[in-house]
Amino acid sequence: MLKTYLDDIRVALSLLTRLPIRVPTDAYQRSHKAVWAYGAAGAVWAICVWAVATLAMTFGLSTLIAAGLGLTMGVVVTGAMHEDGLADCADGFWGGWEPERRLDIMRDSRLGVYGSLALILSTLLRWNLIATILADANSLLALMLAGMFARATLPVIMSRLPHARSTGLSHSVGSPSGRSVYISFGVTALIGLVFMGASGLMIAVIAAFAGGLCARLAQKKIGGQTGDVLGASAMITEISVLIAFILF
Image (cartoon, rainbow, N blue to C red; front, side, top):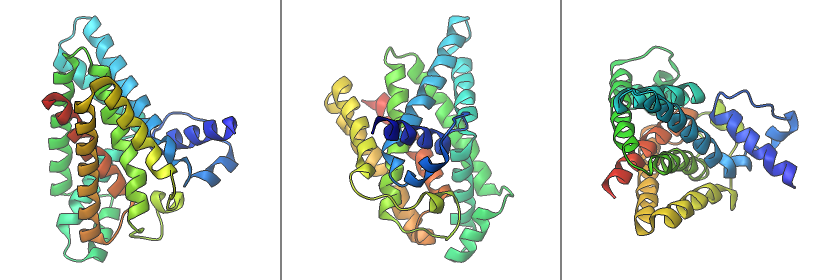
């Protein structure tokens, strides 16, 4: 049983990061159940971002530069897959009039105006948010909550929305169901409650609202979810949690 759970974590890391994780071939048969471990990928992302930024500040670099280096490490760890999803969704959702046309645009490798603006604005926003949070003694906690909630909302979206197309990474994972869908979100919410009390629960509510808003928009625009939708949802949720942490 322990090996199964460890394999699930490896599967989650292999799907949501670009870390050189060795995963047994048969472990991918549980991809739809391994969604309970998606929060682990967010935790790894947070630790990498925080470690690089903290090291940079230790060497005397400004908080803004340290945040930029930390964010760069985060992009490297994830292979920019979430950023890619955000850009594709921005181009597709607002670049086409029909769901079929929007899906075609999302699959196009070329970057449009909407996608470019989404990348620029989201990157600048995350950069400044991380820089602000690094000045706080609980910066690692903030990044952990942001990274984990951003991934923990994905299984819920995957279970609630149908696949918008019959191919792609999200389709290959399958449609998760049962308790595994909510474990990652529940664990992250518990961490927020333990370390932040009522404010932690408020952040959980905001994360759920952000993920739900993304899901509702995807349902309206393309009739379901894709890997790009999940990537964009992760980005929006991450930004929402970082803002909420600063507010609370």
